[in-house]
Length: 321
Length: 243
Image (cartoon, rainbow over all chains, first blue to last red; front, side, top):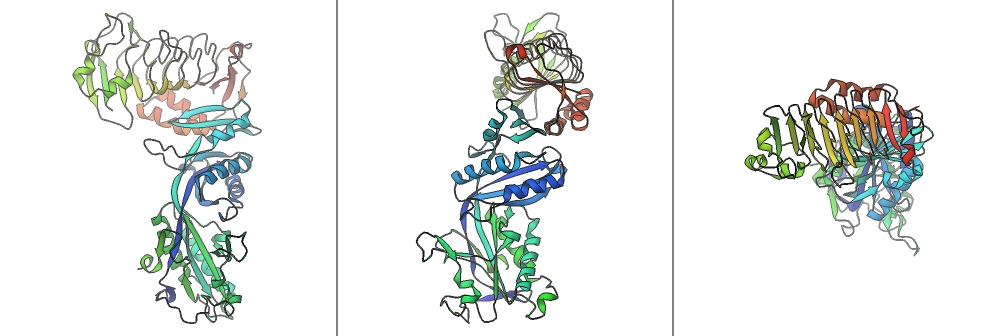
């Protein structure tokens, strides 16, 4: 237990923010665009595609809707959504995307699937198959069309045709940007989390893959059990505050939630962290949450592994300077 | 890569084989004097470009472009060896546009040809890939032996349409007359491909102010489209789309 933090802190909107850093890792990423005949089909397709995609620890991929797209922003002029997916290896991403697209998008009525990564000149040879794999479902009746230099597959299905781009570029990206919001009850921290995620939702190039954008099961590397390579982050578990010697929580700090951010570049993550932390600190707390509490966040910090595992360090003091 | 404008100096009163014009060679050439010395075909007496056309450099775009201006209905076999880039014909063009010629088994294999006037017979014969847009009419044997690619004709078309067509897409403004033994009955096309087609190709018509092509392309996003498949006689799965 550490009643006095060794870290210096500064304040944002009156909330102490520790001068520590979030440690993030190299990942591989891609962006796909899903369109459909109406917004409801888009949402249902996107929900299926991004389901079970919170963490690479067991899901294989971290995937979420980046933002909704208007008719003017999609290749076919229909409602759409941009989805970002991140994985620790190219191989895993190349496995997950076609598999999910085949079971979640091909199956969803009225949908079409397009690449969401701008092509480079010359075209990148780091590709993830979309229609390249899914076309075989057409059993020989599929049609390939090249339009404006992009190859599309038209696969006959029961509602007409599933139109799908041949492949999508894979790019280098960063996963694991984070900040931890600490308070004395659920209501306060929930309100702060939601304010942070709402503020980041419109930002391009980032996703918050956990449920509602936040996780309560932040993890540390390793475990006492040999088969596990991650286990509960006991330093931020309030019930262990007086049990484990390395606890990072202080007296009165009863709830911690972590907002995890994956981004296409370091600047995308840095911008999102800045916006998210400021929104969390400025969040309006609901009346119910403030009855038996201080009514505000107690502290903001970030998760890291001492800087030894990930090469991308996002220092809160620099971001919020 | 460079882009060139070739304007016809005087009317052509005899047939000319233009199969020697290779877009990639012309656009790789930096000097106008050297472009003028390109021969239209590899025949001994074939004229040089400079004898027929006034040649000017045009501003570079993201793709290499050749613009041919004038009535070229006696100029044949143009664009059959195209692999990329843009070939714009501001006027009429003769037979075998984008088609295989000589001993070649395949015609154009990439890029885009836009004709603002009419085109002759055998447009897209054995075409392998790429896009051809014709604002006016096209002659007989349009898309014959088509292997792949897209041909859009906004005017009327001649006889023996899509003969031995294997794959690829032919887009027409009106219902074609086809043998029912070689082509399927028309069915409504229910596909987002219509929207994609209309949105992605809208700039083709707008760039050149082509009224008929503009209306045809736009109609794909708005109205019902019929689809015919064939040529069944050769096991083809080509597609003919029309309003």
